Image (cartoon, rainbow, N blue to C red; front, side, top):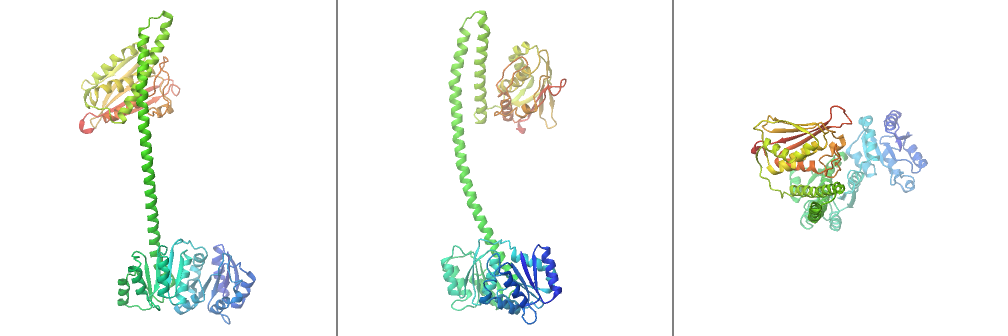
Length: 522
């Protein structure tokens, strides 16, 4: 961006040039007002800002600015961004009267030479690189003084605020009546012809019913009685004339930022309501899909049971020759496996739906294991697998007896047999916890599991079924079912495994069941 620096002092021109060049600006210098006019004509719309010294001989800053306001300079007195070139007055005096005069001529801001070196880059950035943090807001400015009307409008517009202007109270009321839903703030002078600031405020509050609209009143009168009357009329803030531009911006920004925040909160509330409605619709859709899925599974399981049972019944009645015995056995195994899968699916959904009723009771683990050994006796014998049991006679846990034996212990032992080599040993032992709980550990030295398989062992959506050491098949649903039952007892399950591929000597799987032993712990 290009900046024209106008000052009769080479020292101050150097200060301004050095500071602005450090901010990435391109600098052109002029030593007086006449030189500045020549540069502006020559640049013809390529200058973004002018820093203009007020105290210069012959043609001072104010007279230079007045000259630029003449019609003949209008074609060239414009910035690349469009509109008039903003002028930053640089002064050694910085009085209220000078500021009023400069703003009346269209100046963008003032800066004292006392703080020039520290503040010039910040002021220029503020004019040329405004964040427009209040963009989207609209304000009504009412003042019979064209100077103050211009100053306030310029301050707000620089922050991105759209400004409606009125030079008296009647015009202001007409504007706000037409645009009451758009205007976010009213800034009004106290003393105006036709209708003063207090009368305007009263009409806005009572006739238009705009109770929450921020209203700031400006006045040259500075006494407590007047201020009290202003607040009684419904004003939100009060600022005494003459004011410093920075103070005006700070006071107005507080109210406008509140408006912006409230608007954002309202938008967020609308968005939240929309999201809640979408979530409600999604929830209803998911629940409907779940109901349909459960119904489909129920029908499927029901319809599959009878054909499988019929196949098994027919196979048992058939007397076949020796060379068909193997085929018959395979057919029976397939049919039984189908019934097993149906039973597992039913149990898992019964647990999820809370339809499985548990009577949690104090159970002796030795009795459970003995019952399980009896059920699985044939499988142990087929692979010549022995057990090494180390339980205390009084090891007792809280669980539901039938499911603990048939769905938990039987599943874990069946897996241990399935993935162990013939002639191996399965170790079963218990450990009491410090909190009164009890751990039951079942460890085999079988083929173990890969890290990926171990990660998915409880996931019903992942395929975890694989053949055993003697080619045994499985469903892959056993371990998810075990965890569901353990959770229902108030317990937990952990599985550790080392694959035979990872370690030739130390491989196998260890399942640890954590039981509660006191009803108060459930």
